[in-house]
Length: 434
Image (tube, rainbow, N blue to C red; front, side, top):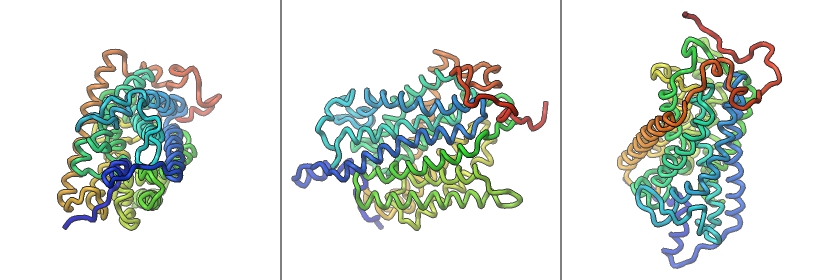
């Protein structure tokens, strides 16, 4: 049995039109939608800064948020200079794009589908930005800011951009193989999740881990960040249709439903036994649901999106419970929440999709999804390890122990998030032992 065929990526609309003997034309409605979507996705990175900042200690809240904020400037420039053409440049091969668009050259007055290519480049820049920002959650409170910036620059150009080419460019080998990833399950969440886990291994645990608990210092910030992420994610997923059409509508509704199911599932797991439903759990659950539905959002029915959200939340919840068995101090559970949910979402895309651009039989599609997941894990994992080792030769990766204990804000930025810390809010709580 073959799944119903459907062309998922408006990136190919220009080519489809030419194949039919017509010239692509600018659509102002699509363009307006994509301008809004790009702005929505940009908002996600400050939203992530609030989400991560609330989860850390008060003494390191600014440093945590700055890792997200600096990603906007850093990746924004690198994407313009070379990242875009590595990912989407014409004339490339199965592994990397051509270099005709260095500095976004050659995009003036050009169309991608029915929207200006400048708009497409801007939209994709927002994806590259938040992908790097996600990694920071695993290394907060101990990684030098300069080391993160250098690693982030290398990671964006050498890991993220080629992977985006593989999956989303018509020349990419995973695209040609029919891998389904509508809005970034492999490209963003799996790659960022496994890179974060590798970074946590390379840096080593926070001082006192796991005997000390670094508790969230500001839960309202966590809820604010989660809300901004959900708001922006509507543009993230529905905008990936690159048009204001039925595909965008499906992606929009599933991006509403799956996180709702994931939030309730997470709260149910928390409440099982003698537990209590928590605000941090609600925020985490909805973010996990957003991650899980991202690759599947335009391929599954609204009803199936409930399954995606529930299974993604269940897998991530239990990954968090058993994360210490990995031996890595992934500070804010980036791998458990983004890597694991991204893997579940990517596989469920093949299992539950009723529309697919490849026309493959179900079993063949599942094999392709497994290959895309494995390729993303291997490429990002090994690549991140090598890049971190390279950075460590140039500069130390970790702050001194005294700065880590006191908090990084003053030493790294000569600022602090709050004017005073009368009660020692956010200090490590030691659980016992020597």
